[in-house]
Structures are given as C-alpha cells and as structure tokens.
Image (tube, rainbow, N blue to C red):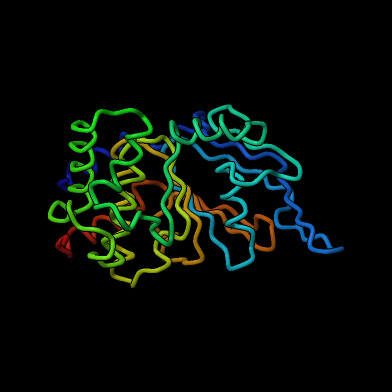
Length: 265
C-alpha cells in the first residue's frame, strides 16, 4: 500500500466513540491459593471502541493476561461483567462461547500456536474450515493473507522450516483471515528480536486499519505500546492510567518512517 493510500485509509478508520465493542464493568478476579486469596483484578472499568488498537501494558504479575483471558471468555470473573458487542461473555456456556469466538474474534499468540504437521497455507486456512468455506475458496483467501504478510513464497512450508518472525506472520494471517471484528494478541512480539518485532507490529497495524478492526494487545514492552492509540497501564490488578493518541499521530511517528526507510522482506 502506498503512503498516500495509507493516509486515506487511516482517516476513514478513525474511531467513533459511540461504537463501543468491549465494555468491562467493575471486573474483579480473585484466586484462592490454599487458605489465601490473591486479587488478580480489582474493579476494572474499561471501554474499547471499534477500530481502536488498544494496548494493555504491564509487568509480569500485573494482571494484564488475566484481563485478556477474561475478555476472551477463557476465565470467569469473580464479580463484574464483560460485554462484547452487547453480549455478556461471562454468562455464555462453552458451546455458545466457541461459536461467538469463531464469528467475532481472532487470536495471536506469543508462542505462535501453529500446527506443526500443517503447511503455512493450511494453518492460515484453518479458521475458514469452521466457517464451512469450501476448500478451493479458503485456499484462495489464505494465499491472499499470506501474501499480505509477505509470505507468498512460503505457502508450502511447515513451521519447522520457518523463522520465528515468519511463524508469527503466519499466526497474524490466520488471525485476520476470517476478518474478525476483534483480535486479541497476547505478547505477539515476546519471542522476536527488535527488528522483527517492528515488522510484526507494522503488519498488524496496517491490516487492522484497512478494515477498521479492533486489536487488544497485552504486552510488557513499551515499544509495542507505541503502535496503539489507547494504552492502558495496569499494575497489581488496577488500572493506573489510560493514555490516548490519534491514529494520525501513530502513523506519522511510527508507520510512515518505517515505510520510507525499510524494504519488506
């Protein structure tokens, strides 16, 4: 995508504040460890809107991963509620949750979570199987997304034949392939070097902006947070502060310079 096109796209992707996709209210999570109670989250209140790239930033043990797991419906809250697109996640049973995730949510993991026996193409196409997309069509779509992440020459490669950065690109393509409205990313650059981390964040940013998708990133790395237009600082289960910046600001400071100075592999 040319810079002029990207500029046009981010203008159309500016967040509309009335369009809230994730609403967290008075969320509390307490774990019992023996006779002790450990408070992981303490009355978290948070709104995330359509098209936002939101980063939950905190050190190990801050509660950031617990918060992501709650929003993804992987853990139940002790108290409080989480609504995604107006649906109370904590009240859903496993069957309904599975269907809801398949329809609306994509995941990117620190450890890539690719199936070792499958090629890059097969890994990316997998979410489309659950949507009952015919094989020829899903392979065509998967190839399109692999090309978008710069892996058009790696369709037939298995994870063991790719670098960590390439595997994470496959993971990104897989998360985006079904065009979910929301993508949860858990330490997406945690196993990558600095240069590859920048490449990965650039790809995620561009792909999300093109279709006004919402990304929620959990990370301990302040460098990753630079790509977010909302940064939630969390410590000891409490939100310390929320920092917001414009999409234009992120583009001018981090996306545009990268595109002007680096050639994509």
